Image (cartoon, rainbow, N blue to C red; front, side):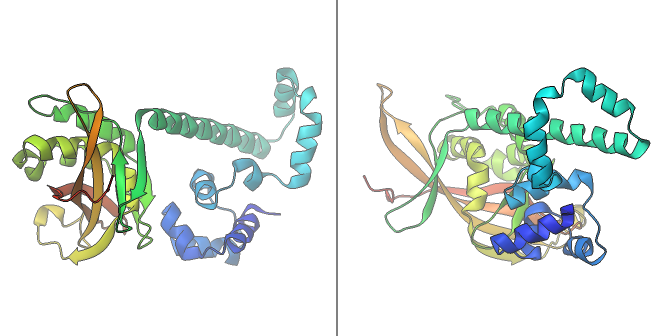
Length: 293
């Protein structure tokens, strides 16, 4: 079975539309349609994103079951010398494909290592409050400045997210993290205007951004009116509402309660057709304890 055939078979299995696959991968729907119409396989650099969206491994996508079984039964004879010999005896096209496959394996290993690193650094969960609304619980305070926030540290931390994308559950919108977010998030006019509790809340909200995007609701649109954003926000701006909670500790270091905050996720609709998180603004502490006991 060809790769494109496996993709469409998996789409049917998951009851997923081509539009949804496009949203999850950032690949144009016309390109996805061409795979079936023209009976062509996706470009190699798209395979990792496709596997993520379809919840399948590269082995499942690239190898047939018979080939996988054969490899499993005979892999004990594949030492380095044998692999080198096979490579040397292969034609140019086969060598090119083998090298590209090894590159993809390295990419997958890097992605797994990055994910493991991020999981270690983040202690975040999503729960529902007493009214059934989602709240992102940020269990660790990463940025603890006693007097003020060191926004340089926040900016460096946010760079880890650049290139990632997350899907808003309520709308299906895919929101990307662009290279402009770290600087804007840590140095915007809004950031420079907030102090104290709200400043520390925004700094630590950085560790929960993926989940804050995913639980966002209340999509609002406005046209772009600024010349400096005529390209990166050519198609306008969106605001989404999100909520997060931070722990409060007593003098003994014991957890006392959680403070819940409302925030607006400011998203730009770029000239490339994609949505990018631009900043998190209008952070306000909620007066009532909606988390209950």
